[in-house]
Image (cartoon, rainbow, N blue to C red):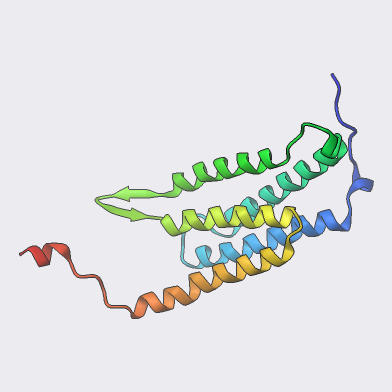
Length: 161
């Protein structure tokens, strides 16, 4: 069986560690909101989703270059497509519909975004990571503040009576 050359500690660079570290930190920051609100998918879940997405992206890019680059038939984007499908399944598993009420939709979207931020970090797009994480935090904090000040939706049963 033919395998690619193994990479050990000497092959790790600050760049790889930075990509994994930034992803994990962004995931933890995003998970903090869910943790403070008491949702099951909190700090650890978001940190792990971001780290694993970043790791798979780094490995896909490294394998692409190690096994031939542009001259090969390897497509690192397939790994990202697979991650998108897998995280979609995980996020869908968080959504609960009970008695006509949908719960955990924001948490599912949060997990999806955390994976996307991990992918961006793994690809080295740090400006995108900062912008996306910042916008997510604004959405979660500022929009919640605005939602609390909006009038409550009227009860449809009360309208029909």
